[in-house]
Image (cartoon, rainbow, N blue to C red; front, side):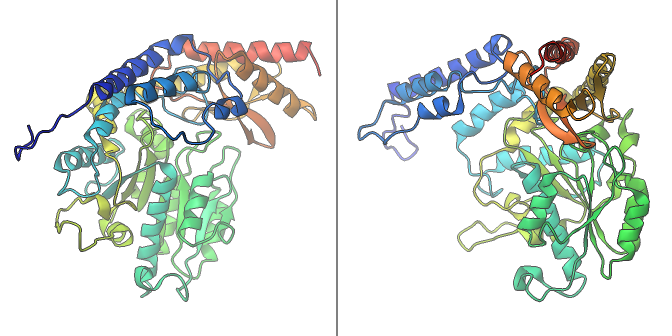
Length: 477
């Protein structure tokens, strides 16, 4: 019976069966991961072809729809949640986060305003406070939960844009960028594509920035950085990096950030995965000075292993974050809450994406997060040591965190051998590293970041790469 006396039947029998089927099949999928190939067994055309076609005139019962989705998806999914997936720096969707994500969808909450969903706001506020504390960033910083690193970088850049132009007497939220004062932008030559996308979205453009030379590990060269700063006629926006995508290296924050401060500039840090290293006391020195920046982007679906999608932007001064993001409408609740979700993200309508991260943090605690990051960094060293012992295989980077850049052979045929080795490893389906380019070479890139990865998984990856490399040498094209 509904609260007003009306009859409300809740769920039909077919809907109940749909819920039960989804839960059963989700559990079955996760339990089967150790036996599944690491990659899809269907081609793209075959997988997509199962779903294409005209929309039928008649509908289908809910439970049958769910069953059909499960059946037609079989063979077309990566085992990204398995400890055998070493690609793209993707976390493995921790089971407690996935379970909490069931609740998120079932609750059906639009979590853009605290007035409408106070319980969600409480959990998401806790996530932000806990992450800021774990990473050693300034207490009281503004923060917002977004889809991932790209949007987190975009929001940080837009907060910087607001503050830097306001300091020159220009209200960018009111007048846009036409006729606005100049804002120089400096970024490392080996930065990830996400901050370049953020610069495009914020109207700065990706090609008008000053790219600064980097060293052999992808870190900004301080002398080149000083030269770039000396050419700035206005306070600059500087984007630094915590975790280079191929090497896992960190820019020298303690050396660079004071130079930007002297120019009254803004420092934004792209720390999608690498910023998590700051949570480990034994490793935090590698990011010395990073807490002196003005804004930071971090992914929750990377090292925290939250289900997709989950990212976080953090801004030391909350005011420019709110000024650049807030979109209040007359139809929305009037709230003066200090932490209002829609004030710090570009969305008014969104799912309660912070709930899975809340569940994972409550499950792991501070000690569990540190153990996770420390274990992955140790496993990356273990992989690098095993591969370096094989004649003809080279690890092209120092192990700064969890990334291993691997090349096979030398000379003009080295890249071909590397790609053939990778293709064979992926084709065998026992593990799944991915490709990249580093130090003028095509590489096999191994990202150690799945919550379940252990010594045996690292050893399996090394063995598969070595076996494939040897086979390719014995079977030249």
